Length: 298
Image (cartoon, rainbow, N blue to C red; front, side, top):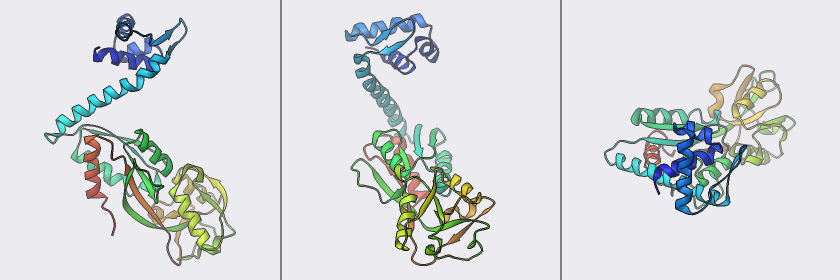
């Protein structure tokens, strides 16, 4: 079995179209078909159901695909490892983040990585809430995710605290408390709140709910949205108020203000999460950079 046979198989399996797979591999369609037939003869199975209108994986093809992916993942890791010995890192690290809540933590990391390791590609995936980020790290869809603590324990995921920000409130500029230097959260008990959805496992939503309960009420949620900056936009539009960490104070859109809360603060604990079982040498290099530019706060 040759590597190029597996490469042809993966291309057809992902495209489910011999013409598109041939174009992707920069081959003519006839040599591609011949390569697939060689692989099928080698394995003694049929990998694709072919018709004039469609191509589909057979059960044998479905069984082979994850192993074929793993072969190429191992080859890439081998390439990375051999070059890392000489201090040269290349490859891709995928990073999940939520958006506005990471505007003080994501840019320092990405800038430092690009300056130190220009051959490393960073694949940035936005609107990733905490639970989704953890799940994607667990299954290998993400190498690194910005999340909020605490998390449900997971033996597959390692986390490190990188920042702690107290919650404050975003208000429309014409809100009755917008001109105050600080507000008591209980004074907002009758307001409608905009928040991230609880169903996606948002650390922001959980911290906001905890703050409201500690103040003696449960918030009346009028809108849920996954993008924190869109939350600010809806606040500016007068849809409601929102509990957000203090880092957003300097990116408030026109029509909104950020006001600190009085009393014992509720913190949003920002962290990064990764799998300790991830063998990527490039990820290890990025984590080392993160230790420098995003140290754990005292």
